[in-house]
Length: 220
Image (cartoon, rainbow, N blue to C red; front, side, top):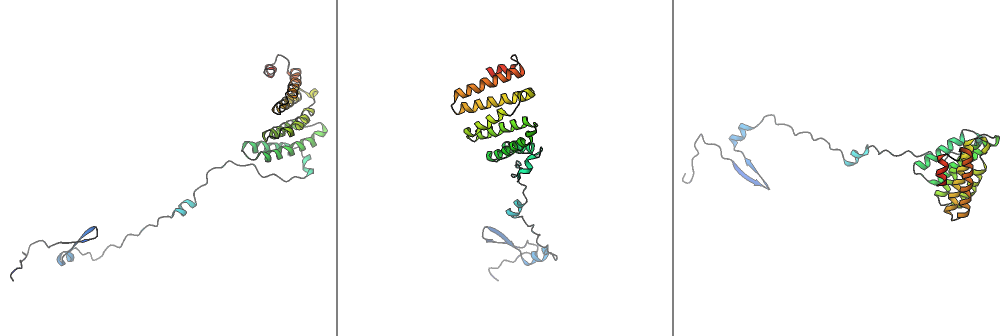
């Protein structure tokens, strides 16, 4: 017929491009489709399930945290006579301070430790430990700004060690005088502060000698 062009028998089949959206897909002729058809088409790939953000973080290990001391143990008065209780409570007080926990919590441990040491010191033992525990109690009072409450505690600590029992006891008394002098100084009571320093210096000189370098440091 006029207007029709006969396609040669060996010509390549015509590929018609049909635009669909942003992509262009070729449409095959019957001959091309029949030659390229796969009798066993591949099944679609199995999609792997992607874990949700919540499930991905659900088992995330928590960062390491500094261990806090245990809660205040409940004690009755009879337990205070146990000679092992005072050192245990003092350790809790120091660990509480080192961990940055509440100073009031550390104060509670230290006060109960001093009570336990006092019970055990009635027979003449653990008097040095009692003095040291009172020093800790007073130091915590000062850290809390409760300077007036620290003064009687330190006065009690000074009266505990017996100088005649050895240099350790004398130096514990000396330490009490120096700490009390610092407390009076922070309260603005300079006369009392100087008097404590002088008394402490005398005890130190008698205990370790006037030529000891520690005496020079105290004088300085």
